[in-house]
Image 1 (cartoon, rainbow, N blue to C red):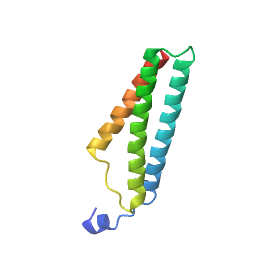
Image 2: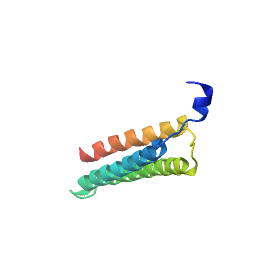
Image 3: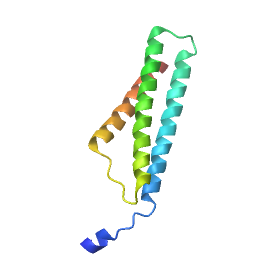
Length: 107
């Protein structure tokens, strides 16, 4: 691809699709966290389940904050910047830790 063609690249709907993907991921994380906490608290709260629920909520809020920041970045300009390695790592850590925390709550 020539340099002129690269400079005239039309991103099309890619930023919109990426923004919607972040929203879907946030929604699925919300549903997973709520269902894990509901299942854990069904038999009555114990100190361990309350700590795990609080940790799950904190991780979900961390991911929500990252996703909101990324969505705002995607809508702020026609050529949004790339996701930084730190943000990507934080999103992965929040997602995996929430899954582990949810699994611990269910079992």
